[in-house]
Amino acid sequence: VLDLMLPHMDGVEVCRRLRAHNNDARILMLTARDAVEDRVQGLESGADDYLIKPFSFSELLARVKALARRQVQPQVEQELMRGDLVLDLARREARRGDRAIELTAKEFQLLEFLMRNAGNVLTRTQILDHVWGYNFDSFSNVVDIYVHYLRNKIDKGFPEPLIRTVRGVGYSLKD
Image (cartoon, rainbow, N blue to C red; front, side, top):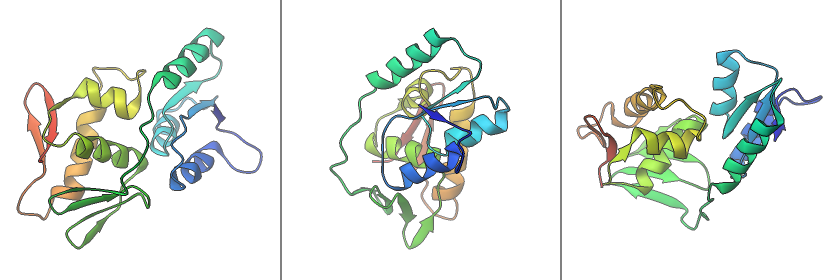
C-alpha cells in the first residue's frame, strides 16, 4: 500500500522507480486525490490499483486480498520476441526492427501480456483483469484506447501489423 502524498517524494515517483528496477510487487495507491488525471497518472506509473480516501476498511482489505491472489510469474526470460518485435524485460525497453519504442508502464504491461499470449485471442475482460486489475469497469474502453496507443507505436510505419482485432471478442498478437 503506497500513499501518494509522501514527505520527500510523491508516491507516483516511488512507484516509477520501483518499476524501473523491475520490482513487480503489487502496488495499491492510497490517496485523497480523486481527479481522473491523478488516477490515470498513478496507474500509468505502474500501480496495480488505486483507492481514494476516505475509504471503507473492508474495501481496502478486499482489494489487498485480490492483489495477493494474483500470481506473479517469475521472469525467467530476459527478452520476448515475436517477429521483429523485441521486449527486453530486464531493461523494460521495446524495439521493432532498428527502432526503439518508448512505452508507458501500462503499455509495457499490455504488450508483455499480448506477447506472452501471442497467437491466442485475449478478451477485453482478460486484458482488463491482467493489466489493470479487477476494479476497472468492464464496459470501459480503456483496453481499446491502449491497444490504439500500442498500434501507433509498434505497427505504424511497418508493412505488417502485429496486433489483430477479433471483432466482438478482443485482440491477438501475431505469433
